[in-house]
Length: 71
Image 1 (cartoon, rainbow, N blue to C red):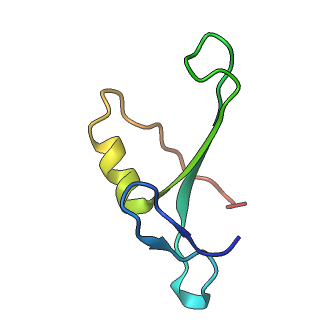
Image 2 (image 1 turned 90 degrees about the horizontal axis):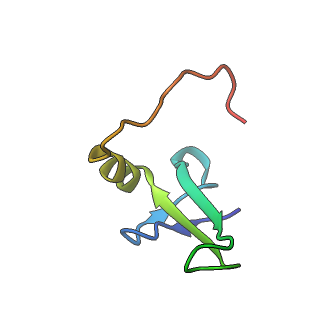
């Protein structure tokens, strides 16, 4: 996967640029029956800053835990 853009702010997310790599959130949702988006697949990316802004106002906080190895 090469460079992509954050769907929220439009900034470039550098995934494979040597020492200037960044990480991001990739969301893929396949909507099923009983939704207004039956059989649609939605996909978007958020940079870390936009992710932080999104979760800041959650009523229930994001569950966090340490992991031993990043895949």
